[in-house]
Structure formats: C-alpha cells, structure tokens
Image (cartoon, rainbow, N blue to C red):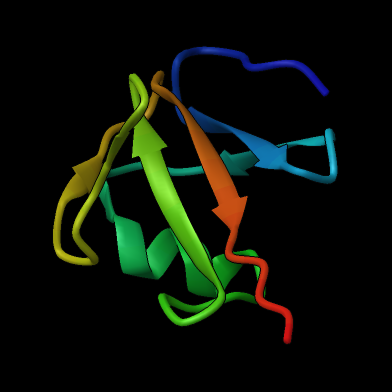
Length: 74
C-alpha cells in the first residue's frame, strides 16, 4: 500500500509485522485509530517514536505509528 497526498496514517502492526494505511482527512484520536483497526485500548497500544499515546492523543495524516498488541498469558 502506498501513502499518497499525505492524507493517510501509516500503521505498523507489532508483533504481526504487517502494515496498514488508514485514509484520514483529519487527525484521529489514538483510540479511534485502534477501533478502525478492530482493536481497543485493552488489547493494543499506539506508539509514536516509541512512546505510548493516550486514547485521546491525536495522530495526524502523514504520520507513521506502531500499534503493539498487548500479549498476556498465564
């Protein structure tokens, strides 16, 4: 997938290793971005430059972020 015109958010999925491109005309809240990917704050966290974002933090078109699934075991 390619990013054209800066109107997309590139998402790297960890640990899956894939990438997704989310078309966005405006900044999206990190929690909203997770929901668009079929996730929520209980199962994944959005990272920008290695730092976790709060669900209300904004991610702008043209940015690349990582979405890391929270793994639990017992």
